Image (cartoon, rainbow, N blue to C red; front, side):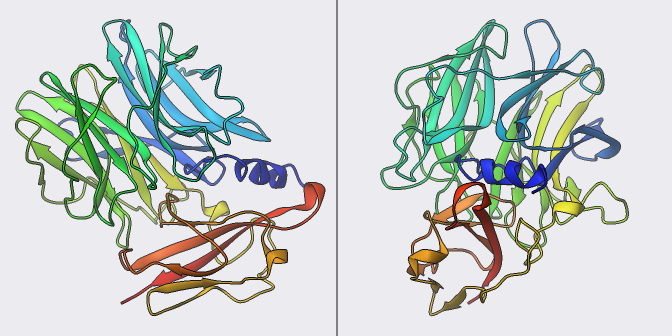
Length: 373
């Protein structure tokens, strides 16, 4: 078995709605935050769900889900003087989370004076309904877990938090709400969040926000074809409206991008903006082929009457599966038999299951399905 295979198997053991093995993070630049030029630079060749800021010392910090070693993934941070090169990398340590069934992933970072507060997805109970948690640090990579849960919704998944200060209010957005919508909450202290009405603009998943002289901009991406990165604007953090055009769409003419671009993390510089964004690696594309490289020995799941029907034979899967959208986000916890997908937006999804086997030869199965109306 090649070293790439156990890395995939290890990823299947954690919550990891980000998929660092299959994705890479690239860099683009802009003078105004609207028109972007690719630099052709890879920040990390196995990474997902980036978030960026400038630290108290002015250095650029980019947090992302990455490979700690060939067998484990976790939150990492890359630090640079100019945000473009000379990266110093650290594994992010959060003591107290090592035993969580759904380990920390989906980092988002906010500065409180000289203190870094990390918001992240975690599932300490292993019930399949992750929440947003937080931890604090003075250096940006050695964190102390904070007690309690920052945001949760009973019997629903809360995924990939994104936060932005708008005046005295900390705006919170996260995935897992109704199709095309984002969970939304407000806080004044960064610890206690009051849920607000869900935010839905052009079915965008909101991934990162920046403050501007004229207001605030949030970048988001589409969960369905055609996928790409767009932006919304608000003068005061209240009503968010779609800005015209695309910030980035897939460039299929080169070798760096494949399948999609998503999850823009944008940070201001002295002369403009830098974007760290995610694409799929061509060599890791999911094309109805198992992650072990084998063709599927059994039929693709079927969808009829708004129900996704999975095999009921327990020998075919050793753990509950997840339904992933086109960007790799988990949108539904699956069970054998009928699964109601009538609430999902039409589009391409992937069924991800851990196949029953013994020892190291267990495998992760990923199969493409299409939800139609």
